[in-house]
Image (tube, rainbow, N blue to C red):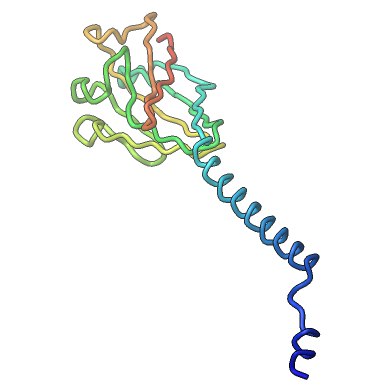
Length: 166
């Protein structure tokens, strides 16, 4: 009688075993696809700074040039501006008092840290930078001259532009 009972018991049917194997394979494949998509997304994000507006104004009362630079990040990652060059020279290398940088509510000059600029421009947003330059013939900041401004980011990219002093 015991032999008869063992014959009535069966393992999983081949159809059910196949369905389980295919289900597990699909779940693993979908999981790997999401994981790889997350990894690839991290490598495909990029910053793209645009300079849609830059202009200079003469401030007669203080004998300064006020330069307004608008930055727009149209990339898919945040950007951090870590240096600004005027005529190829970093702002920190100009004499004290010649250059003043303002953004958000921060004002920097050589005595307060032009060596450590950190301007964060979030993806899809804009930021306005105000640069004040003293009129100086030694540095070339005189009426009618064109100065080159290059914005450098922490990712190592440079975004050059120029402005003519009126």
